[in-house]
Length: 306
Image (tube, rainbow, N blue to C red):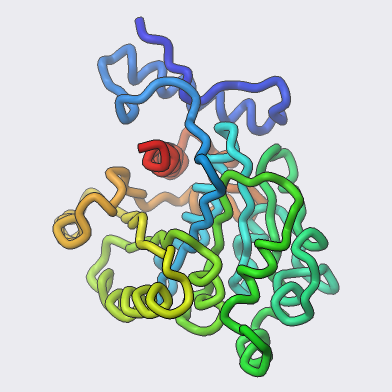
């Protein structure tokens, strides 16, 4: 019998994380006993040689940007990675899902971008999730698009703030972008080295994607030559419909290996988890959504090691 050690339990893990990891370990052990494998890998997840800064972007709303950002980050942190989620969406949904206060006078990303507040002053550790941190967004961020226009080096203010931060040695920084192609998203793309695009498996999946890719090319040409489209995640997959399979096939045909093998299914648990201030990884680790995001995060981690 093979021993699966992909999701090790560490003495320092919180009870919430240990319970979630135990569920995943049990699932993976069962799969191994029945002759299945989880990506053909065994052992602890590899840590990247240097911090990977990933912008999760798509100007189309409702495609799963925040859900993907939060759950990929949670899955990585549960497997020994140190992860920072930067909430760049004025709605603050990522902050909500990570139980990070983002109302009232809480210092947030807006003050970092506009008032030059040090990043160290806003980063908070996520409760019961060792290794996972959040830079929250408040509704003030909605005004940043206008206020950034008159500032010097307006496109690079987030990159400057992240470069100046000398606190924790993160393995991943995941930036949750707003559903637009404005200055906030531009700041994320200038600060990042990789772009992750969630695409929902529905009829309008590729609508507007061309403009996002053109913006990525423009930023790469003029502001951030290291930027690359590294990952596409297929979300909201409904295996009962032929349409979902057709969209998935079309995306894979066009983008090839950039698309993760794992697809994220539609799941009620994914929608419920934020209302409890949790990612689905701890809210219901045995759900189809949690299993899928764990597998997607594993793919992302191992791609860095190739």
